[in-house]
Length: 75
Image (cartoon, rainbow, N blue to C red; front, side):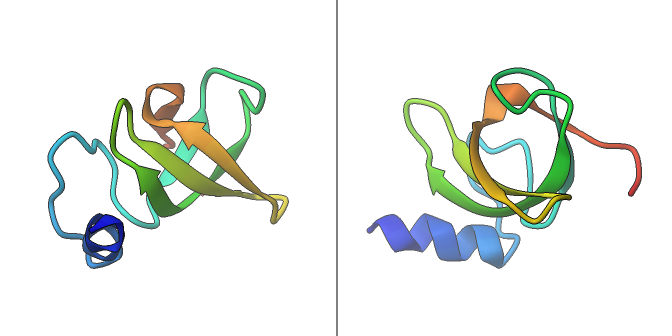
């Protein structure tokens, strides 16, 4: 069931294929939102590539693929 992996993400349970955890602070390195920082609030799908909702520092939520993200160093 789709919500199983979503709840696992919120619980910080390991999920095969995910490089990040809930609330990780990330830098968007590619795509429309490149250069922006935010926190991971949810994983939407796992295949073909994990897609996350990132809450940007501006307060807006955007959908970003895992390959477009890197961990940020600090807030």
